[in-house]
Image (cartoon, rainbow, N blue to C red):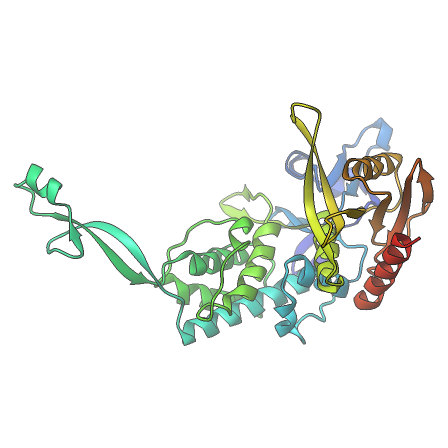
Length: 400
């Protein structure tokens, strides 16, 4: 298909699409294979493929620009509205609800653009109200004394008229604002926002920050675990949005003199973060949900298990259920073995595999003393109703 003058190869998650050899230039196919093999399985034209390209999306959604005129669209198997709901919980910001009315998008590209425009408009509002500022220690060579003077340097270099001073400056060039500036810069280079809609607002917000904030590269991790207070509380949803954009900005490549940034959402990670975030808001107070719980294996501790989620009794710290999210179509033997090992090492007898849709071969069995079940957090349904059904199954099992 063609979008905006660009040829787009559309791939659905975990479905193989066959293309005639001439539909994908060799250089573009090799680029896809070399840089995006985790997102797309590429089989080159050969006698085994009947002289065709075989492309299979591998659990990421988004878009990959290959040349100025050709890109690959990785389409989700779940509704766009479900992806938005997943973002709310995975990034820990139910305050994303300030976007109500923005997210009735018909495609992932449109969702990206609407989120980007919402971020830019919120940044403009913060610029009008005044950016957060802090006192930052500076060291500089000045013609007059400011703050404290480096007396030793003056004594050692009496001929030097420049005075090395340490002082505190009240500035907006702090990481709270640097995160916003870098994110808008990344978005502007993504090619996902249209000049007739979101791009002018994004450029305007970026220019507003440029005068006061340095352009400093940051990662999505910089948006996590930040402290907020009454003067910067409104930065929390902004940084949550920045986290999403920075996490999904894949590695860039160049074609000619133009840099192109892919937009890639790892659906397995998003599903795991969503399930954890949703459950955390819904669990009764006597239960505690532990994410990424680590257990050393062996006497020397050189290896370890990292368990997606462990449900514990808050009073006794007893492990009640181990949960492992699987963004897959079917239950695999390796997944069962893995979750049984998790249950053994935590000392509980309940192990749950959570899928976004009903697997082709659901499981409910006992392996020794451990009961293993597959349950569904149905992303095709209303999120709240689907989640409540999931919790009901977990708790029914816990008392069984």
